[in-house]
Length: 110
Image 1: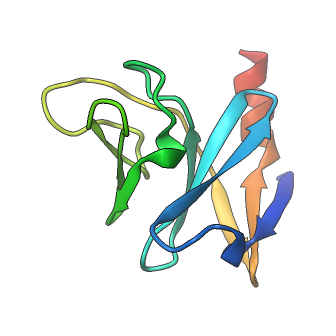
Image 2: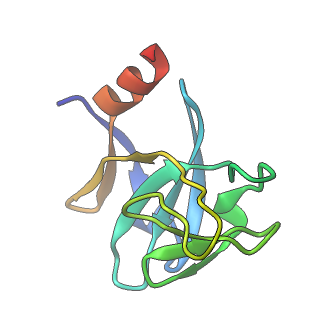
């Protein structure tokens, strides 16, 4: 696999996010209170809200524009809205955050 180093774990605040530009557009990289890291499409499919500006709670994020909650591990929304966002494999190696470049290449080729 092609893993891309996108920064130090401390570059993403606890219960916060960082925006990363890629070939498939901007991604939001989230860090939970338990130091879990997730990468998803940054734009909410409803109104394009920047998910990286949303509130992180547990392993979910709430869209800052219309309060839809997305599960960061699956990309699926909670509740009656059936919205889904793309998720991307990410891992921690020591204190570095690595994003799966192969997954990005597959999405941009589709």
